[in-house]
Image (cartoon, rainbow, N blue to C red; front, side, top):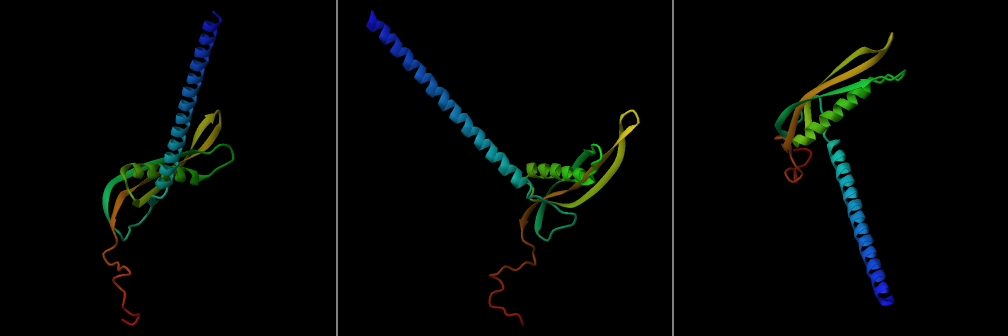
Length: 160
């Protein structure tokens, strides 16, 4: 009878240990997946912010992907008035769209800033800024046609 009780206690302890190990393993896997997802998100954000928004053209050969548009909306709280915040938000939204399309840059970007006031409470008006940005998303396919690499101009002197 005492041996049966000891055997039951031993099996119960083994079951608890096995369940604890399974929980620990699941927690480690969850932490690793969270860390991997965070790293991937940080890499996506870093790559997204490398997309340049250019108001003119580029010399590189490129393929047009699409025309994109974004809006940044900023409601100025209290005395802090920063019209550049709406532009920053609009550029960030545009870079997100370009990243999803696989673009390297946005060219011929045009900005339109709108300022107006909205009534929040009785006789209290709050300034609001909107920036509308649109441009052409491109994929760079090669260097400019008039570009000479180092291998092409070796052996030439400055007088030539």
